[in-house]
Each structure stands twice: as C-alpha cells, then as structure tokens.
Length: 327
Image 1 (cartoon, rainbow, N blue to C red):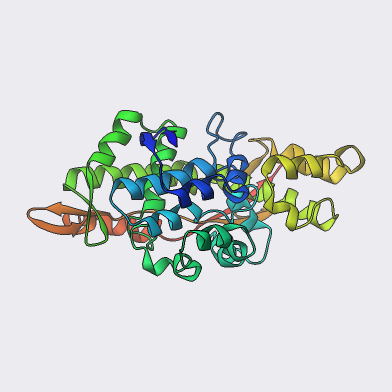
Image 2 (cartoon, rainbow, N blue to C red):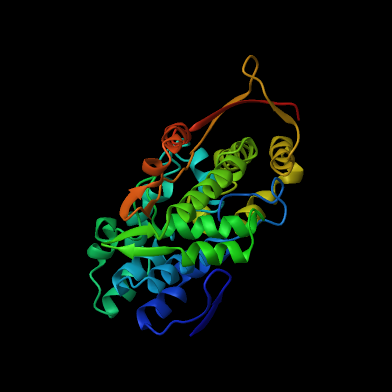
C-alpha cells in the first residue's frame, strides 16, 4: 500500500497486520473524528482528524526503527476516542477535564470489544502485550518527555494552526534520533526551538481560553442531548457527523437545545470573570522538556537552559478559566 502523509511523505506499508488494521472499521471511523474537538468555529480551517494522526504515529515509529509490535500499538492507540475527541472529558464521568484521559481509561475495554483482537490474533500477535504500553517507550511516555504520540500531534498542530510550515516540520524530524528507547534531539538548539514551538501550541490552542470555551460548549450540548435521550453513550462512539445529525433532528422542537447549538457554533458571547461566572472550566496543559545532545552529553533542555525548568513547572499545571456567558 502506498500511503501519502503530509508529515512523512510517500510511504510504502507492506505489513499485513497494519493493512488490515488500517482498513478496519475502528480505524476508518477516526477519519470523521476531529483531532481535538470542534475547533472550526474558534480556529477556522484547522480541522484535522484522528485517523491521520494514528497512521502518522505508526509511520513515525516505522521511520525510526520501532518493532512491528510498537507500530501496531501506535496505530491503534487512539481508537477509543469518542466523537469530538477530548470534549467527552467534559461529559462522561470516566474522563477528567484536568487530565483529558477518558480515552485512556476506556482504551482496553474498547479494544477488547472491537474487531482488533481478531486481527491481531490472525497474525500471531499477543493482544495483552500490545495493550500494555509499558512495552513501548517510544510510543508513550509521561509529560514532559517526548513520545511518538506527542511528536506527531504537535507536528500536525504546527501545520494545521499555521504556526510553522513544512520546512520547519522536516527540520524537526531531521533533528531527532532514537537512543536506547528514548527520543533525543541531536543538538540543544533544535531541542529548545521545538520546546518553544510546543509551548506556543499549548498557549494558543491546546490550553487556550478559546479551547476551554469550545470544550465547555460542546460538552454542555452533548450532556443535554444525552439527558434528553436524543443520543446514547453508544452513539458517541460513532462519528462527529453522525452524532450531530442525530441530535440536531430535535433542534426545532427544543429551544434549550437550539440555544446550546448556537452557542457551540459561536466564538463570541463569553468573557473571563472571576467575580461573576457561569462555568469553571479546566484544560489540560502540555509542555515538553526534551532530551538532547549538548556538549557531549545527553541532557534535558532545562539542564542546559535553567529558565526552562520554571516554564515546565508552570505549564504542567492544568489551566483554570472562570467564564461568564453573555449569549
């Protein structure tokens, strides 16, 4: 299979297990799941989907010599995302606004009830081994470390939000290497530049006030629709489009739903007001402190640039917004 990716270019995928997984309904569904929620009203022309990211993580791992098992784990790592991705953390109790971890908490249950185990077993892969992320240090690590998931979504974010262009993305990739199961930048300057770009993404998009409002508004809309039984929790594991179509059949007969729908599609009608607010909204905040080669040693950016340590400490805390709606 010849696959064209905006980050990694033209890549040939030959492993049968990867091809079957890519063509499975679980992976194909991700083509209609927005990467980070319902961004269009707040960040026009920035839409990008979970499918491209999932295949991208697999391709990144392949590019840097990861095992087929780790490539498989990378490919399926996001299959348990609901419609509107992290917005579900503002709806269902299994998630958390501060951690945005609903997908992680539901991952094993979702995979085991899907077609994925049958595909893995067909090719002799141990399902339990694939589901245990501790086997795959290149794929997943805790913040502020680098991992394939974090690298791929940030590179896609740089392009989607027009923070940087393709040349910069290629430069970042060319500056990376893998040593002893760890992502390492070849030099400090490249690592520090990437870390600052990641901070720009976090401040402007991942944990911005606009994103907090988006999550709250989408969450309110979905929660109300669940309460009124316009959709079920099971429906949330279809696609963004399917959920919208099912709920919006009721717009003309439900004034409250229509109000929530209009609010969800507006980037106006709110302000931060700590004295008189309608909603306290948290956003997960992300920051990286990459390893890099510096003066003959492997160090973190914060070891070579002490000021970065304070940035990491501050940006690792969830953002809290006290929001007053005027619409």
